[in-house]
Length: 286
Image 1 (cartoon, rainbow, N blue to C red):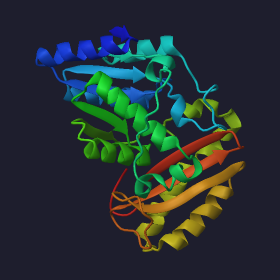
Image 2: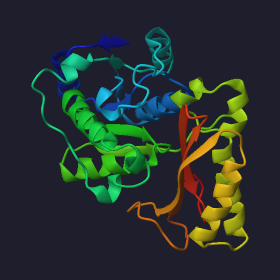
Image 3: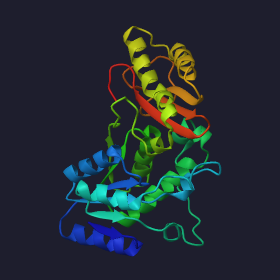
């Protein structure tokens, strides 16, 4: 497995693979790998001849009050895990190379997709995501890229950006990978203290509750939201960011849920750890 930090070297390597007739699968990450990341890498390996994983904690997607400095990092462990699932290249650029002095271009996707859910409480976040992903696509030149569905809104934003800018990269969504107790895998789970683990389960349990209620005939989003809000706030230390039933394509709120409705959740635990989760509620699994 190669470790590449230089942007020009990364592009040159990718061009060599393309000339040799090999396809490139790409998994953009911020490191601190867990089984969810490894599942994305495995899928990329199944779909492409070569797998590139970027490891870059992108400063432009963190807000002024967010956890950039504290974001978990363990490059040595990440290398071992990536190698164990057959990754060919880790691309680990430096921030000053990705954003050199004078860099003054931002990619912004319209507010129809970015103005609600995580975008409402994290202004500028999705501009940072869209900008860095477009840069990574231009550097790595992949044929396809695999993203986790836990970051449901991010996936929708990247799909829209890729289509609108004719970037020529196939975007693949991978289902959420969960711990045995149902908690969606996330690098931020490392922040949880032992006593906060039960509180974190409020998200997956709220999803299960919504599915049960929908199966019993409750399809009105407002009624479901009120019940779920009361349930989540019954857990110690929970602070709701949002509970929203949205259309899976447009991300716009719905009044009555159906098979295309996704329940999106974001909760902050003891003011420290912000976790998200999502899933279909009626007629689908996610």
